[in-house]
Image 1 (cartoon, rainbow, N blue to C red):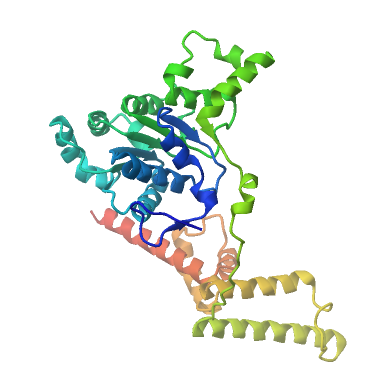
Image 2 (cartoon, one colour; image 1 turned 120 degrees about the horizontal axis):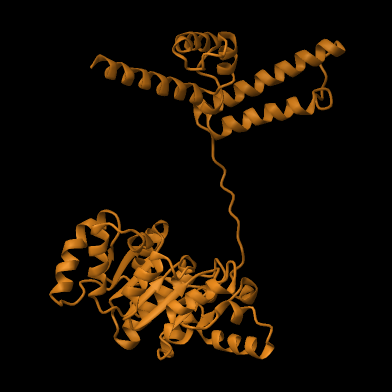
Length: 383
């Protein structure tokens, strides 16, 4: 473990595999200004990126503002990691309700030329995909800020340079001092997609222009291929798990036993006793006595079904039919069948038999859906 200073939350630690060389390498060679961190999944790309932003503030007096663009599904994770590792940072989630709340304020501050009221602004890729008037205004507001670093997580979504997302994000990021990409899969299908990422990062080096990119990437010229590899090398930092295996902490497993609730235990014991009685009665009928070992006398499929029912109860007692008796099922079927709940081509007997195979939760869902829908239709027809 390595403890981190310089503004990290007290007690926060990273292992070497997650700390990586990315923060110090990029921070110490800022003349590059752009890079793709392409570590394999699970090696802590997010923590490395957050560490890098923290180093910019404490080693180079660069507090931002920084723009982090990522899928909506990981926005909260980014916010959580930033608060953990950079507690001194002011963070704004510019997404959903947060975007609505801050949109006008940020736009007016940007127009007035005021400094950014935050260190990090978190936005989703969706802001750069849609053409609504509100999102166009939000993108204009983002263009007014002088970004220190534009960091793009899951950057492989920018593999199509002709997409609306690629062009809109480039319009915001083109004047940033630094652009950083995080992706565990920089090469998904072909080299053209990787080239799109590189062109986004460094258009002055990788812009295709009049170059026949297809011919270039399909070339068998070994000297040309070596030159391309030498050009790409300094800009793509990638580690595999096999590279850092010795740095990983030993894997530990903890088994926690969870006790059943009283009703759950009652249902479990009741089912076990019922299945045992059925098996004993069946084998006694065939052999004339109660055997000590039922295994081998009962079909394996039947035993498997019994264990499946016990497993369901262990997960939740509502996954079997225990509350609704056969009489209840018969009554429910007769109430819902005339209204077409099972389809008019299905017979009543077949509907009753099908409902008997439902668990308590499924029967409850049938009742809830059918009668709610029936009441709603009744309300509409009454008007």
